[in-house]
Image (cartoon, rainbow, N blue to C red; front, side):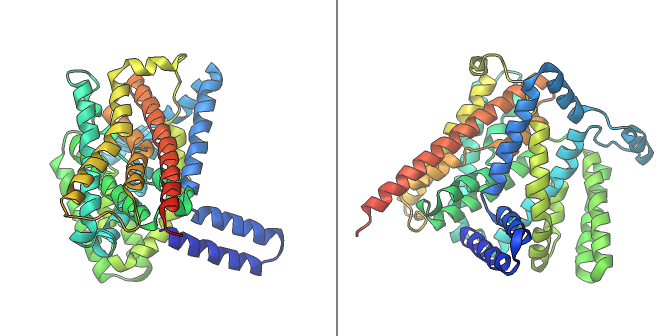
Length: 418
């Protein structure tokens, strides 16, 4: 992934040199920013800080900002009634239900590509990342459940199971050659499998009452999408795909399964040879519009007067310990066992110190953890507390992971023969 980024940046640089003046420099800067693997993480940090600052600046500004995202959109109720179903009522609802389905569409294409021709295409390649991802999902969930069993918080057990692929890879990219390329590939594969686990958790545990008729409609859409990809060509195929994708999304929304799952299902109906085209089309809108918009809408959190109150709740501790301790411990401990047993080997050129550092970065939850929070809790107070804990845990994982990998990289460099 980092090699591809270097190629993209090199190509952008050469092209910019052909266009003299300010226009060429601006074009180069924009292209370089878009193709830089660190950009999405930096943009998310800016959006999150902006949202928190506005929400906590003055009571009036905070209320207006929150109400902007939560207010009912005129005409949606009437449209829902006309369609014979229900639709999201607020801007944040449309972001979380529709736009995030596009985010999952991109994630689904990445998963399919890796399963068929990438780092997950053979048991030998996929084995270690699969084991790491599953153990990194299970242990945080167990920690959360142990701390919150018998409480009203228990439904949020899926919150600390997620890894934010943009942030984790962004931090790894900041470290450059101090993180071996093989470890970046391992982290990419782990994060993709983690996304798949999160998708399954959302589908199985965070939906509503299942409506069988609408599931039948969704199945019909999938069959039609498969046929469209096989038998049609040109603009007609693309128009039909978009229309069928919208009907698929609407039917999944009505079925009781979370509508973002429609994005995954649509992705798996795209032929392998067309995946690069679709990924190229949605990469920029997802990473530079949808995810930042998601961060702005879902981090309008009124911070408590004393941050110490965050540590008084088992909800906060379940998330903090799940992400910051459970993730790296689950990943590193289980992988240590299977590697020592001789089933797998460490990624090429990596040390155990560096491997543990990657496990710490996997504790950056952010986007997916916040998304699961919005599904797990309807109470505003629970959501706010969980989001604060996610931000704290992700910030800790980011800083500690960066320092750990930086020092591990320097130590490994000193140990190499001159």
